[in-house]
Image (cartoon, rainbow, N blue to C red; front, side, top):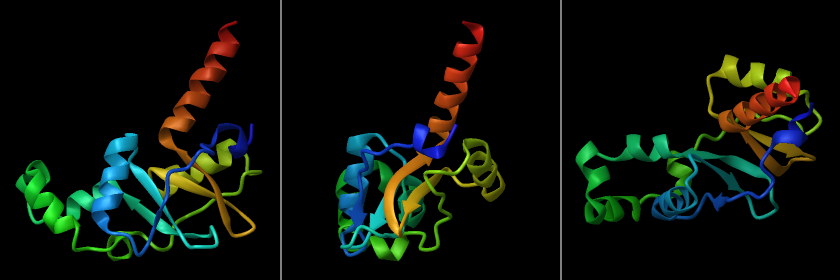
Length: 140
């Protein structure tokens, strides 16, 4: 099984010059934890996560108070919080190899890049779904 068999292709992305508030709204609205940051040409610039945003807030109380959170997050740009040197994989990589990279690196997602362009993302949930599908097939 290859990464392209389990990756998410329908991507929600953001630009590095966008405000963190917009990233937060996309993360909450789409119920995701990892948001790829892309350049105008579709290449990967980095990743911003829900954890990056939570850690940037001055206190846990700010996270729970929408007006204070929105004010704080509307000032910052995505590029200030994103991880720039993301570990990436290719669509043609073996799923087991990609899972080992993710485990060793202790990251929650791996952007999938081909010819310098972001083509997908694979997360821990994608690996769990693949594992469950394999077990279901074995049972049948």
